[in-house]
Image (cartoon, rainbow, N blue to C red; front, side, top):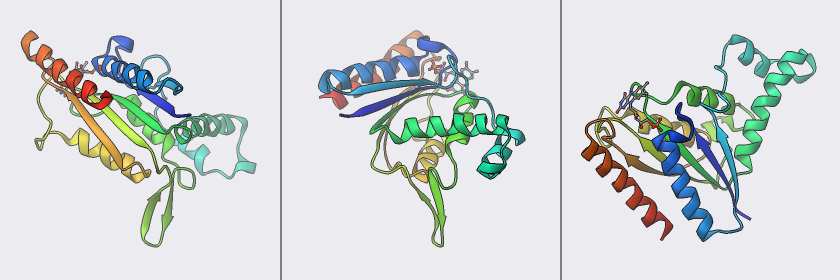
Amino acid sequence: MTTLLQINASISHSKGQSSQLANQFVAAFCARNPSAKVVVRDVAAAEPVPHLDGERFGAFITKADERSAAQHAVVAYSDALIAELKAADVIVLGLPMYNFGVPSQLKAYFDHIARAGATFKYTEKGPVGLLTGKKVYVFAARGGLYAGTPLDTQTSYVRDFLRFLGMTDVEFIYAEGLAISPQSKEAGLAKAIAEIARLAA
Ligand SMILES: Cc1cc2nc3c(=O)[nH]c(=O)nc-3n(C[C@H](O)[C@H](O)[C@H](O)COP(=O)(O)O)c2cc1C
């Protein structure tokens, strides 16, 4: 059975354009794969991931038998996020652009899943990602037009981060120009929806 993990990162709950596009893709995917198990993780609106501060990172690097109860809880939370990711064959990420970057809660999520020995390891040849064999679809929603230009540092950041953890099969689907004009929004969404239809075919 295929397990699909949908990660929503919009601050606008289910109204977020990235979440709505991710939903449409997941519906098409499930129509093609009726036995698929879908797990939804909302990192920004429903269950915002806390920022990684010194205390939380301190819990990660404290030996298991020396952790306080609070530190155990922090590590258990991170472990649960990682287990959810490890169990997924397909990952669908709704990716809003906020102030040229990823939502800060998504960055916080990334900070909780990048753990040496769990999702990557250091070797003499450099870091090696441990989350291999997964397919990732990213639904990127933007007010402006950036894809393919030097201003789109978001795409390379997300791609590099996923590669660091071993996820190299990553496809970006863009809905851009959503804030420029009603016509531009319509065209941007139509392009993304056409991509979803292509992927579902
Ligand atoms: C706080 C905030 C910052 C934004 N910054 C940018 C930006 O830097 N570039 C851009 O193209 N659009 C920007 N936008 C527009 C969003 O990318 C657009 O509304 C998109 O639909 C967000 O995804 P969502 O609807 O899934 O939340 C911003 C929107 C918000 C609310």
